[in-house]
Every structure is written in structure tokens, then in C-alpha cells.
Length: 142
Image 1: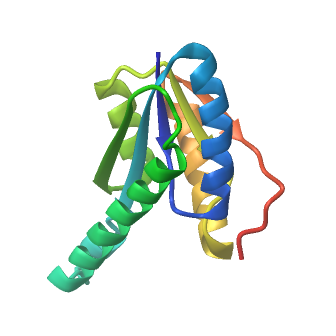
Image 2: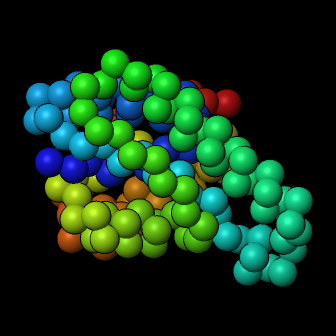
Image 3: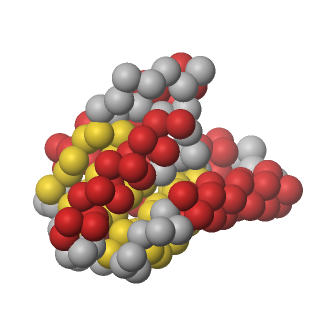
């Protein structure tokens, strides 16, 4: 079994990891952790090499910290960083890796991102042909 886990570095992502670790152990699942660098700055033409490098480094840091949180996980954990629209990259990777489940949060970083991630979750839920688990949390991540 393979589970795709999109994460954004928020406290809510930590909760998702705890849930996915528990489910994954029961099914001996491979976990694929995904962080997507939003390409909105590319679309507007405002994107410097320094900004891209910063966002790439931040993405790798988010993934490395998540893998560290899963250090006791007994099965394979892969790290993937992508550039693009989050929901498109999630759906595309889920298909490429032929995952059995996408597990993601119902919201993410800050007030604006909460709405954005809610939108991403909704789009993935409605447009992916894979099963999607939305991990609802009471955490406020402000």
C-alpha cells in the first residue's frame, strides 16, 4: 500500500503525520511525503532565482523535518518536492505513483492559506480518482 501525504510545514501537518503513521503501520504502507512550491510568482512574472532557491530550501527543510518526525516508522518514507499548483501536483503524483490513498489536512498555514488549503483539499477530493482522507483537526495555526 502507498499513501501520499501532502504537507506544508504547519502544526496541522504534524497532526496529519501522526494519523498517517498510525494508519500506515497497520497496513505496512509506504509513505510519500509531498511539499508543493506554489508557482503563483512564476505566473505573475515576479520570481527571482533567490526566491526560488529560498522556497526550494524551505521545501526540503519541511520534508526533512517531517521525515525526522517519522524516524520510528518501520516502512519506506519517500520525500518529493514539486513546483506548481498544489492540487494539480498532488493529483499528478498520486497517479504517477499509483497510490492507494491521499491523506491531507482540511487547512494549512495562516488565515489566507487556510482558505487556500481548504480549496486544495476540496479540489483533490473532487478531481482525483484516488481515495482521499481529509484529516480534520481542531488546531489553530496562526
